[in-house]
Amino acid sequence: MMARSGESGGAAVDAWLAKLPATQRGALEHLRAVIRAAAPQAVETIAYGVPVFVDHGHLVGFGAAKGHLSFFPMDGSTVERLKPQLVLYSVSKGAIRFTPDKPLPENLVARIVRERLAANRDHKAGAPG
Image (cartoon, rainbow, N blue to C red):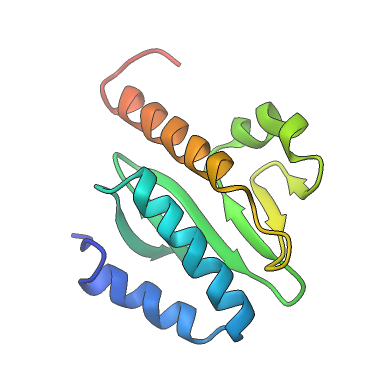
């Protein structure tokens, strides 16, 4: 069973973040706060080697590499659908890459989290799509 933020899941994410350089850590802690605000019931865990929020399935995640940070919407269609709003960022099918000096807009992150949450809940309820 996964724990809510502040318990073992949150502690694992805290430990993961503690290993990063200060600029990356600060940017991802801010992203984490935006995600938490948009999905307060989600639990945090480490999956695929990165922090992931879970609510009725994997919701979103984030990661760090040497030259960039990543936000993972955890489904293949989100990035494609939002490409016009992501022209300032490097994207792949499952990731939006950004840097601490050019973070993702909070409103965009919150929108993606809310859309993913709705999709997860619909899927778990057996809704088509």
